[in-house]
Image 1 (cartoon, rainbow, N blue to C red):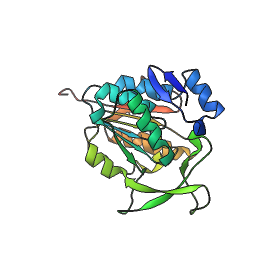
Image 2: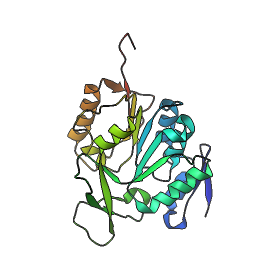
Image 3: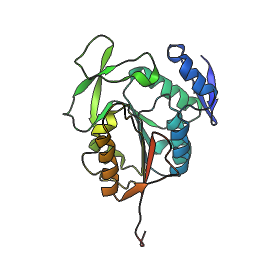
Image 4: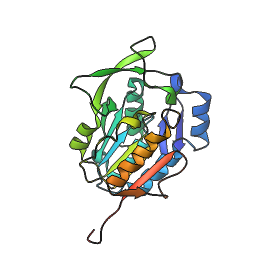
Length: 227
């Protein structure tokens, strides 16, 4: 199993995931580069971090190194990636991260599951839009409100392949300072992006150019004169 070093983070990659495109990104240091740079800018020691969609555990590791592993809660829907994430956290001496297997949704009944399509490439796996068919597995659903309530994050970082469209229906009751998400405009119309931006504004957050690049969109809390 090859080991790559990306921006100082060591990542092992199983042969089953080693598509040419992914290997190229790992070799040229472009793998999740924008999300990694954003995490380094906004995650600080002691911050509580909620990460939705962990991939290989690259951003997870950065958050753990910055905030302390015990302050990071990471959620991943793809069951095949869970041992990969755990292995990469161990590879970087970050064993205290809480890792949950679930798909995040706006609302779900207790014990609910949904079909998750396992794609050939890392980024092609996502919640299925059709009932359970070949190539899908059932994954637990967890409402975003439950995660916000339990983690009370200062930072939320998400890359959930379009599922973000359903996570911004209500305000989050937490001491949120920064939000970083990857948009997936091929998965939803422009009005969904407007909804996300409007939600951030209602949360007293503003666009942060230092955290944003391309499809990676970053917001930060606007503080009043009293802090």
